[in-house]
Every structure is written in structure tokens, then in C-alpha cells.
Image (cartoon, rainbow, N blue to C red; front, side, top):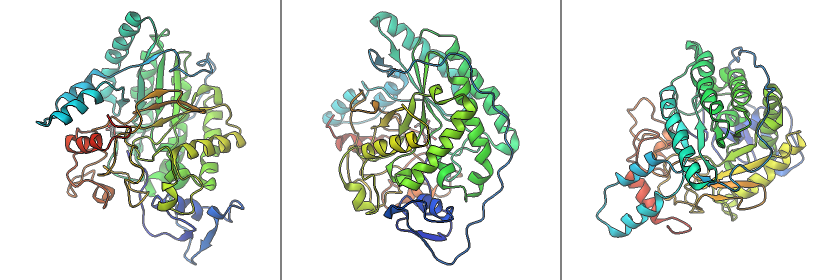
Length: 426
Ligand code: BGC
């Protein structure tokens, strides 16, 4: 899981190139300044446009025609499902400090995303769903699990830390459908009375907006779009509420990038069977953008979206302009409590000065279905050892911790610091 990465030489200089190559490459791809707003001014440097790899062809998608989930906030009138495995990881954190112990005890009461990050992880799914259903029966109200579906072929195409198990050249596209999405959909379909939330493929379509000049992203363009359309079509069931990952303010905050994302979403949703197949979008997944404030402008003066809530507002407008209307959002607040935790907005890996953010909460503001901890606090973003196969340079940035394990592994030292910096305090 990564935000984006500075890749190679920047061939055009936008009025900003925050977020590494994200904005710069988006600008480079445009023939003329895409809009009148200052943030979109493109200044040619005289260098040639970047070459991009040809996209490999993708399998066709049959649009969904069955009943979709109702147009309502799935968290309303329900409780979040709390993962017992997460509580165990929190309990495994060694400390002699009573204050830290007290914070850990509070932390583990919070719900977190249930990540299906490889085919083998699906084994866990029936246990989670049964557990949630049993609790719902006792409590006499829905207990909603948030399942993060994350195993796209050529995953994490612009970074390395979360490179996945499926490769397009090894039949990964077909395996994604048959061995990953279909079995997940079958588990969901077995439980028509259970409300389930899906967060779909963090970082994937955002990479199609801004990182197509990265060879693996360029090659994967059609496979990404078709695979996500397939996932939406299959997982769209009357009991399943899908939120597609939509990056965050520091990546797609500029109007040109937002519009690019909205156009891609329109295309993907048309392929999947329509906008009503999804509930909306998840933003800030595994990232650190605070909800409020003007801190984004300090990091990058040209941004029209200086905080994450402003991003959701802007994105919602842009999506509507492109025909994707009536959607709602979840913001990941697992690690966004500190407004100025970074020196460079594009840094995404194990930010040392980060703090836990708002507790998960239903309908906290207009447009938002929930604040939620999609990234389980304490899980690493990527290994900091340069000799590791999945080492990404961002995991050695000036803002990153230097002692990090592999992505997804438990990282107690980082967690303790993030709990101490929690805002609101734990
Ligand atoms: C990792 C996944 C992990 C997830 C949640 C991602 O960065 O690549 O393996 O499940 O984070 O911690």
C-alpha cells in the first residue's frame, strides 16, 4: 500500500509537484492546461513527454443486473464489527509503562479494516462474518464488518512496499476473478441478511490517473479498470455496500487529477452496471491527512484542498460533474491526528510523527457515512531495510521510521508513538 512515488525525471513542471510524480505526471499527460484554475498551469521544460508502456488487453466484464444494496448509510442503526485478531495483536505489545498499557486497552476497543490482501487470507472471512452475525443476533442490531479487498493483479504498481502475489503475465487477471473475487462474493451471498461493507483496492484507480508513465502501471491500465469493474459487478449484492478507494487530498486534490479520477470512475461504473452498484468512496486509506486546517497549503501552496474534508467536498462535486452522483464517503482516520506530521506531502511510509486520529464514528459530517480505521494502527506500511525485496525508498524518507518491518506486519514501537500523539487523546 503506497500513495505514489517519485518516478524518474519530471518532464513538465506543474505549478506544483507535491505527492511525488502524482501531479507532475498528470500534468505531463495533458496536451494543454486542462482548466483555467491556477493549480493546473503546465509549464513545458522542453523535454519530451514520458513514454508509456502499452496496456495489455483485459478480459471483458458482464455488468451486474441483480438487485443492488439500498441507497443508505450501512453504518446507520448498526455497530462496527471489532476484529478479535486485532485485539490480540494489540495485546501482544510489550510495555512496562502503565500509561501505555492504558492506551492500548482503549485502542483495542476500536474497529479496524479486515484486510483480504492475498488469496490465502480469504480463509479468515467466514470466521469474521460468522462472528459478526453472532454478535448481531445477541445485540439485536447489525454489526457491520469492513472488509478491505486488496489483491489486484500487478498491485501497488507505482511503489514496491505492497507488491502483491498476482502478476498479469502469470495469469493473475483470471486468478483474481476466480480465486479471489468469486469466493469472496460467494461468502457474502451466503449471508443475505448480514450487512457488509467493502473498501475496494486502495491506490489502484488513483494510479491510473497519475502514474501511467510507470511501466507497470501503464501496462496494467486495462487490467486494473476491468478487474475493478468485475469486482464491483460481482460484489454488488443487496447486503454489500462498496466504497472504491479514491486516494486523498495530497494525491488527487487538484482539479485536473480529480477530473481524471471521476472520468475513470464513470467508465468503470458503466462497465460494472451503474453508479448504484457502489455506495461511494473511501479516502485517506493508510494515509495521514488531517481532517481540518490549512496545513496542506504549507506543504504545497497551490493545493485547492488543504485538508481531507475539503478533498471529499471537492471530489464529490467533480464526480457529480462527470455523472457519478449521490455518492457518500468514508475517511480513514486511523493515523491522521497530527496536522503537521510530514515535511513532504508525498511521504506515505510509517510517518514517525503521526498520531491516531478520530475514533470511528457514524455520519460525523455531511457527505460522510463514517470515520473509520481502515488501516489498523500498528500495522507497518513497508519495510525500511534497503536489502529487502519489497523495500521502497519512501520507507527511508526523512519522515519515516527507520526500524520498520514488512507492510502489514505488527510495528509496536511506531504504534506506541502514534498513541502518545493521538488527537483526540486516547
Ligand atoms: C499491506 C497489507 C496489509 C495492510 C493492512 C498494506 O500496506 O500491504 O499486507 O494487510 O497494509 O495493514
